[in-house]
Image 1: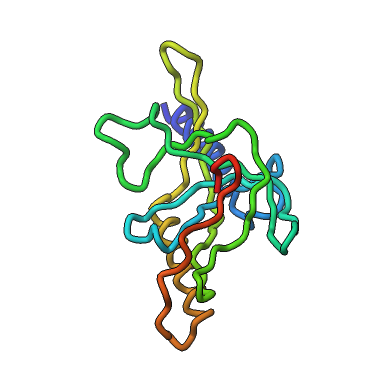
Image 2: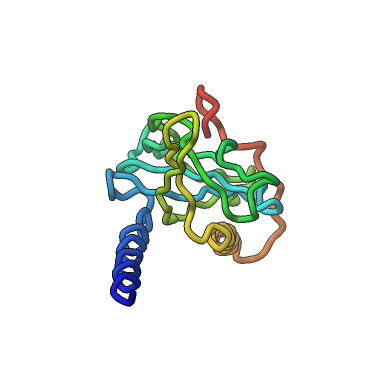
Length: 186
């Protein structure tokens, strides 16, 4: 009785320790398989707490016009894994949007008057798998403490805007949107 519970608890603690911290360092540094996960937020999405989830591979490199380029893969909320009645707030299951990473521009978006519009926050994820009756299992991820991380990303954005505009002068609405690449990825 007691030994089995103790062994199960030790195994559970081992798995939690192995999962925790994956993707926690800066998004442009190498890590497990050279990748890191991060939330990308835009000021225009603040009211709905919107974000995009990216997996970054390797170091960002400077390209033409001082744009930073990085190999990245976007992850999206999975319709297949969505519970009946929809996802609960702040707990989504994500699958890759593309099978392989692409080279994307990784530069902060600014408004017409130069104010920062976007921010990035490194996050930890859990790698999970769900069995399916008809097909093989589906691999997916969940952002650890997703709600708090989304709040932190928007707080970081607002703080960075405050630092870059310490006078509190009125700031315009901003540019129409981030420039997307040929494939429609941001």
